[in-house]
Length: 245
Image (cartoon, rainbow, N blue to C red; front, side):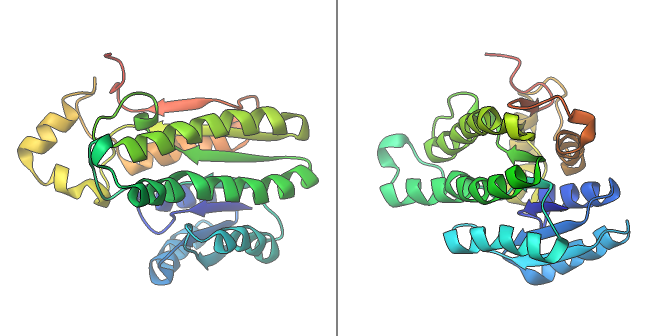
């Protein structure tokens, strides 16, 4: 039984389908029920039972209820993928409003903490489980103009390591994935502009966008039994974007 947040599109959608293909029943969480139903239909093609859980991850009660609903409807929780996140503004540090900073942290970091708390209790009691937190290469270095997002993702990586150490004796693994530039609807404004796209992909060794399927396959690997001796690790999937200082 797996729970994927931000499952209505992009990396989350493809991760849910990859987990269904690997034999997991899948709970799908995001704000839009209609989009989740379409993803559920794709998962069902692989024989998976599904649970559609419309959820606002910035709402603490909703996040904690999401985990409980997964256990109730699917009979347990073996895998949690904290994928929901993003940002819709950039600004220099001195111009970033406190409320904007807090909003981005709530979306990208705080809800991960809530979900981890609930999932950790369930998995610890069950004697095992696996968590994959979707971070970003933005959490690995300085990102001028995007202090909120970079701070949140860096904190997710720290949270991943701490949870892995605390939960290792319980048989619960916790890892993270740090994608580079991935072609999604969230950055359409970049890949629809030829010059912006050229400048974006030029910073990576492979000089192309990552595909959502490529990130999803890595998440599914870390979540499943093939990665049974990996915990506390951040797997960078960026086409060589972070090779240069």
